[in-house]
Length: 317
Image 1 (cartoon, rainbow, N blue to C red):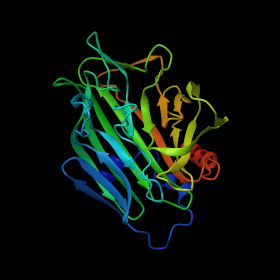
Image 2 (image 1 turned 90 degrees about the vertical axis):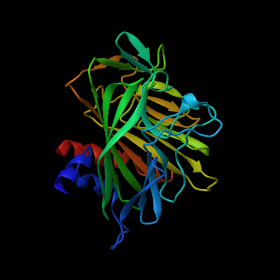
Image 3 (image 1 turned 45 degrees about the horizontal axis):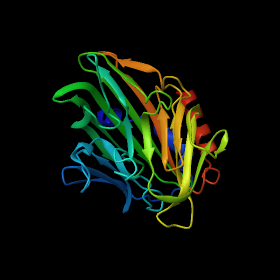
Image 4 (image 1 turned 180 degrees about the vertical axis):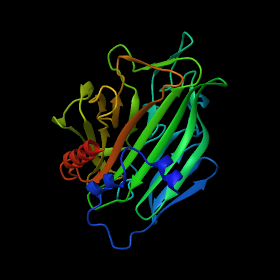
């Protein structure tokens, strides 16, 4: 059990849940996993769905075959069961829930596009572990980035999910990338936008509001640096707001990073932006993020306070 917890523990220990766990019930419902159809790992808290990790190759009916993809999270659910993510949206068929993809992948003098699934793709390889208790749940998985049948990157994903409290739920994600043979260089979309990296595509909604520490963002922006960003709206025809914030870990390279903020429904930490980062064999890189799901808008959901608590925990490590 100790080994398993080491495998699936992410950015911080159980103390990380303290900022979002006040007021939980005396006898909380336990987390549980369910696998389905050889493609999906569903996570529930009691009977409430939390998220699904898609490890099979998926394709929506009527969508071109070159849009097949794997190794991402969708759906992600709000605290009241509303679906927060989208997959295969008509405006960007390659967008996929909560994912980590880059539009420029350069290896052996050739360039490929993991973002738009051109010449390189993520494939599931094996599970490292799963754990579900009354307090938290987690899983870890090894994937590969493949050009044809050649594996160029080993990708380890560790996800830890904390119990929902009245104000919100924290989901920690750690990504470890290592080149397998030859160096692999990644970068964002050129020449101006720089998007690519840890990304969240939102489900259809109404009254979208994007908030950063600078305040409400009235326009779409590229590469402005913030430690966190939030998108809140009314999802699924509901009359009330809910939202998602992404927190950038202060040990990530270039922290605080630039962001891709889109009112059509997208938050992305744009690392390395317009710069280049080369992944080398024997030199793994780990990127860490927290996804904070909350009721209400960013102010009602106490997003700034949740980030401050997260940052304070990191200082104590």
